[in-house]
Image 1 (cartoon, rainbow, N blue to C red):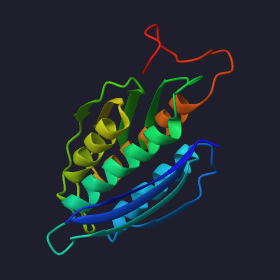
Image 2 (image 1 turned 135 degrees about the vertical axis):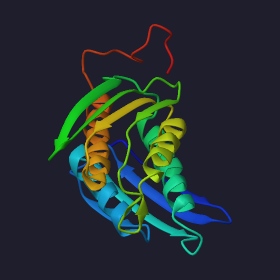
Image 3 (image 1 turned 180 degrees about the vertical axis):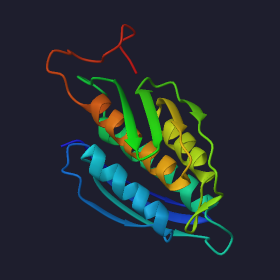
Length: 193
């Protein structure tokens, strides 16, 4: 089982993330931000990752540290669960429609972290979640997991756009972390990722 638990404590947040990449989509999420919990639950369910997230953040300031730092810890947990990356498919992509929104994710577990994010939100908030934090979350995940990550969305409803991006990421990641028995060792001509 490819799984990991990472805890990170700073002056702003205390976060523990447990992930099982070969799970069933079970989740227990508590970040203190209801909409963000909903997004992480969708990520777990659509990726079939077992995911537990607990976070105590400085929500009296705002949600920025909670969302960004959760992205960091999730990225670290994904990287740890992948181990030496032997046998990986390595790349994945997904088009995810959600009502009027159409979202796309393509990613490569390359060891070269990068985020290209092309989405605009009509509303600044979804419940208690600032929509601009979506880009911050995915940047943190990409850097901490060593992933090249491209996300794009068209739509009008900020809830649909955000949720579509999380689901597209989950399904692209599920494809990328899949094991192909034909792949011997690291899926790179360099021999390392």
